[in-house]
Length: 534
Image (cartoon, rainbow, N blue to C red; front, side):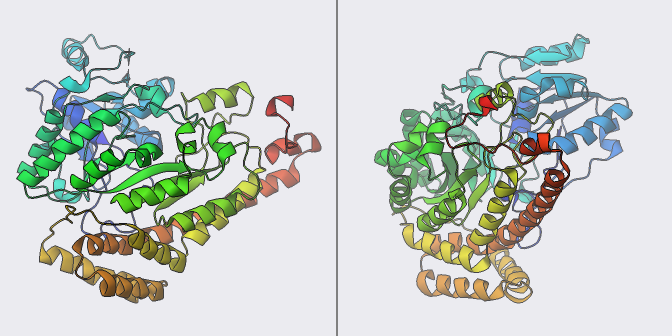
């Protein structure tokens, strides 16, 4: 089994990994180790994580079957892996979100493609492989009952190489955001494991000696808020029985702010922070995207409520909706500052395959079907209403503003002021040698060598003076301190990339014939003009 390499990304924390902290990857390939648990017991499985391991020809030649799972962002490495395996005469199979959204493309690269969730039919796939009857394409339309999904094979991982471990409680989301492929790939009716299944997974991690954070990777942990509440209560009891070995974090929709009992239960279970898809301060953009759950209350009030309820907030922000005007960049910047969200992912709207947005862009003739996007920091894969040069320059300025060292660390300090610790929240208990090693590397790389060392020392002194005897805030604050090494440099890299894209775009516009000028610079619509009218 091979987990392809990711390019540098916002959530990749490449600036920290192997540099400030000894871990080499943020998270393990949960999908692959779940499929490994579905494989016949007599199969011998090796796992290669390309985040920190080379895939050798000897690894490929050892195997009867090379299995790959991937997301779209990993597509470049997917092509390399499958091409090498084919050149060495080995059979290949790919599944996961990339395969489920673009199976026709992957059929040209792999021998077998699995579309959908294979939990309930993988035994049949395995039998087909063993008897030589394997189909080129398996398309699974039914959503499996994940009550029967086994505990992932965590023992296949080199767990010491990861900064966080991951488990999954639910799949799917009840909302209808136009740009989201979760609802098209996994459905709008959230399916959950039972609390006892989840506790078995925690037992497995505990028995392997894991004591670092655990990411509950659900795209919306509270999609079924009743069952999420029941799980949080069970997690609290498990944590008490095991002396709180894990810090949890997850993703949730904005309506968590309307569920105080659930928020309290999560904090009691030792959740520390949550990612929220905030997307935009523009009500017009939220209505356009059908993100109605973010319109029920003032979003800033929701963020404050969650912070004061015990969860530190990270957020996603999107620019490039049809309704966005040229003031959207400043509005996004102001919201991020007022909300005090240090880890704010502010990128371009994209239209992933299978989404309603993709279908709409295709119907309107606006889709760029061979776009090169692998992240939300690549130009949109459709023709935008705001001229593309305006978008590129606006996002470039926004990133440089919110990730200037002084802005980032000032926002970080205010976020810790806003975050109120729950009575039972406990930080991870790392060894003294582990913490000392990170501290020394941080002081050297950030406090001495870095160009932003003045902002670094200011924040560190504020952190120590105010919360030296509050281990929860000290741990999270130090984590944010370290993250500056990633976010400040990554924002600068993205800004430089956007500057190059801007120059290329302006050159294309300058050399385009008059008839194609409006296409080259994206749509330049009157306020009430529809793209279909062009």
